[in-house]
Every structure is written in structure tokens, then in C-alpha cells.
Image (cartoon, rainbow, N blue to C red; front, top):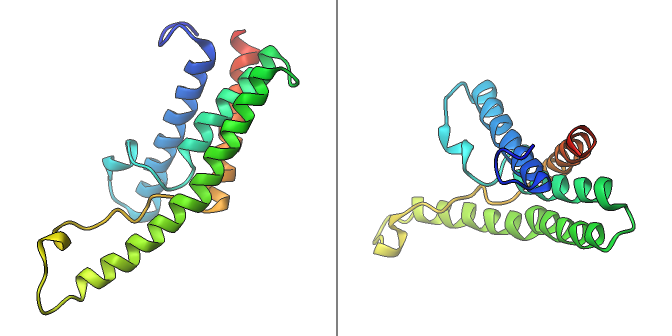
Length: 149
């Protein structure tokens, strides 16, 4: 699988990210009955493309270099930090954006220029979305490492 970057592990991570983004697009199409092409490159939603990306990398490294290797350890630690951030820190920022958007919608007297643009609320993920992204990434990483290495 040398066609994209020449690096199998990076290619598998990119593939997992792309699959997660396409799945988000399809889920939006099915559940909301609308074509929303912003989902192809946006953050948030089901499954977590961040989790898929880092888990594909970590699982491919573990499969190729050993589950006790320093490279797998580093990839696993980074994956855990990214997944924690996706489910907690960015989720909290999204909840704050919802509240601020509500305040801006109901600001009837004066609307300062600061309130001109709606904030993006879908920044983070639920733990289930992170889990599903992680499982997708692990599947792509392990299957790709087995198939192409």
C-alpha cells in the first residue's frame, strides 16, 4: 500500500480517517435526509475520525513492530490522549458553544459585532462515538498491517 505516502502505517491511518468521514456523511444522509458535504472534512459526529486515525496508526504499529515495542507504546499513549481530548475537552467546548449560540439567538437589544458568526457546536464526541472511531481504526490498522505487510 505504497501509493499514497509510501508509508503503510500512515496510509492505513489516512484510510481509517477517510472511512470515518464517509461514514459520517452517510449517517447524516440517512438520519437527516440531506446531503451535507461539510461532514467530509468536519470534526465531531459519529464515528470519531480522530479516534479512527490514531487507533489505526497504533494498531498497525503494534501488529508490525510488536505489542511491547516502544513505537507501539508511544502510538498507544498518543491515541489515548487524542481520544480523551475528543470525548472530554472538545465535547465540553461544544457544549459551551451551544450555550453561547443560544445567548446570541436571544440577544434582542444590541448585537455586538462579536456575535456575528455562529460558533461550531459539534467539536467533540460522545464516548460511544470515540469508541466506534477507535474500533474502526483498530480494525483498519490490524487488517491493513496483516494484509499489506
